[in-house]
Amino acid sequence: MKNGLLRRFRHVFEPDPPENNHIHLNYSSEQLRKKVEFRQLAILKHRTTAVVAIRMLLILIFSGVCWKYVGGWVMGLWLGFALMHTLASMKSADDFFNEIEPEKKFRYWRNRSLQMIIVSGLSVGFAGFYFMIPDNVIVEMVLLALVVGVTFGSIPLYAIWPPALWAYVPCTLLPTFVKLFIIYETPWFVAVFWSAVLLLIIFYFGARLNSIYTQGIYLKVGFKNHQNQSDSLFASGTVRRTRSRI
Image 1 (cartoon, rainbow, N blue to C red):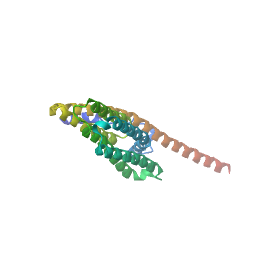
Image 2 (cartoon, rainbow, N blue to C red):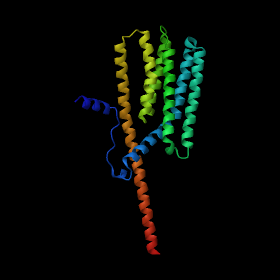
Image 3 (cartoon, helix red, strand yellow):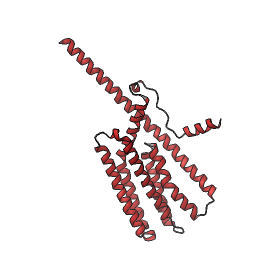
Image 4 (cartoon, one colour):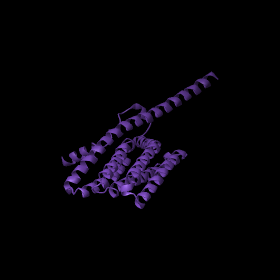
């Protein structure tokens, strides 16, 4: 019974399986899974440029508003790192689509993308921890707006590919939570409880959003497969009719 409850709890955060459809029969389950996972990564790469550009804009706004309170060489280095990471993310997306056959290097692109996502999350989490100073409401409010806005604004992007969501959200939120709990001397069990609740809510809705994306990808991949089969049948029928006429 205990294992059944744990299994059920784990499945809540997994995307729903696609409905059986005859247009997928030409692919094995492993082939279909790989094609869908690659498609998820391709969509994420396609939308990365706009998201990281907006994220950088929010970082610049925060820096401009709070420079006189927490500005200095640390913020300058952090800004430079954020800018370089933004440019590197855009370059990575371009390299992915300029790759002749990126599907054959899926493992490389998956690992590279995940590393960049983790670094991006940690850079925002660092700001939430380091620049959060007590007794300064302006910095606290603007910094919370930055962290929350960047995190929740990235959920629609990273929900496309679940590993990205699971890696990014804790990296951005947990350091900020830790600093807030230290400042306000929150009991550890209260801090752990509310952090876990918020993360579970985010992961739950991220999984639901991912199921919507995944269903669409399965249908698109299946439609292409069905279309290729139809084109092949049409071509072979045309050849047969041509030969019969000859």
